[in-house]
Length: 464
Image 1 (cartoon, rainbow, N blue to C red):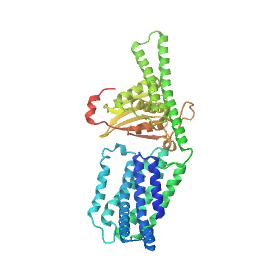
Image 2: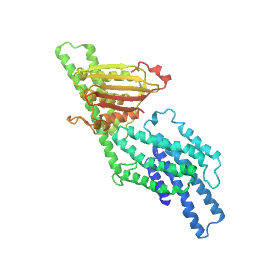
Image 3: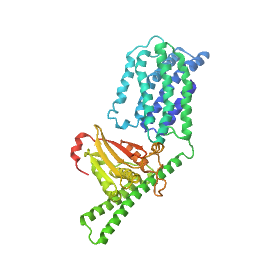
Image 4: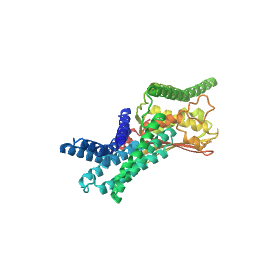
């Protein structure tokens, strides 16, 4: 069990040092520390006490101190392991930021654990097995279920691989521990099978170390010399590509509307109202380029949202208006059942919706139908952009959110950053993004954003 103690506490410490501010890192480190406490309890009983006894150093005060330390370490493992595992599975779930009750959830889940101290364990038992098994079993099973469902539903193949690695490291060990630590002692009176946990824990540590070398595990990347440089280069490359993508779209708008103004001027009878509108589109596109440059700043840091109160229906209509020349050959249907407000970074949201709309146009024939819907549920604003274009195959759909992946390989100015960037920005708004598509039946892109508090909605209704 010395291996369990050293292995788990080392992994926990490495993860904590890697990213101490990240909530998921703190919780998964807690799993390692609470699990390692069980190893500490076994080391005290099986190695420390016999060693001191053999040398006649085990005085009564020392024996009492070690007995208390063994009991405390054992209870930390028994009580802490189910709780920390479930909390990690909860905060690691992609929908966790949207849960309005997440602030009091840790305290609510702590109540069954605290209630354990109201029960007296049987003689020679370290814990009241019956009661602890009653709440530990659903905690562990729920945690496993959350990890597996989140990994299965993840659409980004890079994130899906990371989630499956985390599930592979945690789920088998906790499932095995459920039987050896709780169910077998409670219902069969078998107490010593916990010693076999070391083999499953060895598998967990192997998964963590192996994946850390190749892919990274929860931010832990084993690469001594090149890690910082690698992350910096990837950040710069990603930021430059995103900025290029934004500039490409806006320069296209400026050119289209510039040509339209030139054409109108050549006829000698430009409409002043139409001219002002076209110039506004050009000015908005140039302002958007400036905003994107200011936001990204080389992408050496994460994109920071600058939120404001907006009316998403007005912003979407503005995006469609800026794309009007390119949309002239399509039928466009706007359906805004929701005309309330939301908190969002206007510049980033314009870029997201423009990218999705552009993808839809490029996938459709000249007489295609583009449908833009905006609806609401009790807690979310739902945006749908639907086309009747060529659609995507399953293998394309699985990789649609991957950075630098594109189905438009024949176009020189395509960077493959569109949907990957959109996914990241929507996620930063605490939203979700999904793509449904079938070959020949078109594509629907769904984005869901959290609704603002009701008491603020009326004050911004109708404002852009």
